Image 1 (cartoon, rainbow, N blue to C red):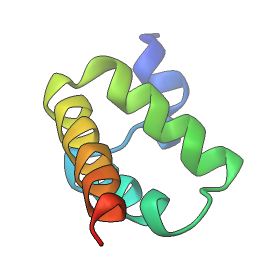
Image 2 (cartoon, rainbow, N blue to C red):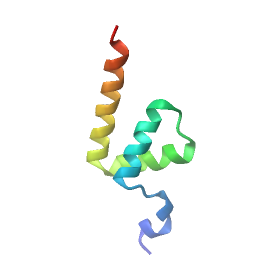
Image 3 (cartoon, helix red, strand yellow):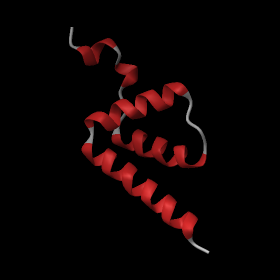
Image 4 (cartoon, rainbow, N blue to C red):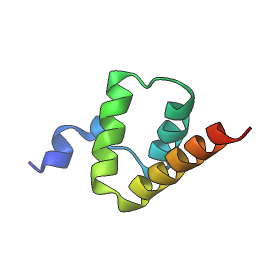
Length: 65
């Protein structure tokens, strides 16, 4: 049995991942949410890049007077 069939509930779509990235900027993600997101970001370059962009924007906005 392929590994992705063993724990299908671990999978996130890119849409779900981007939602969690955005929510993670406003609140602390739960352990399950955090784990699922980290696993997705490890295999999805597009979502990893989106996460870096969101983190950059958050830091930039905090520096505004």
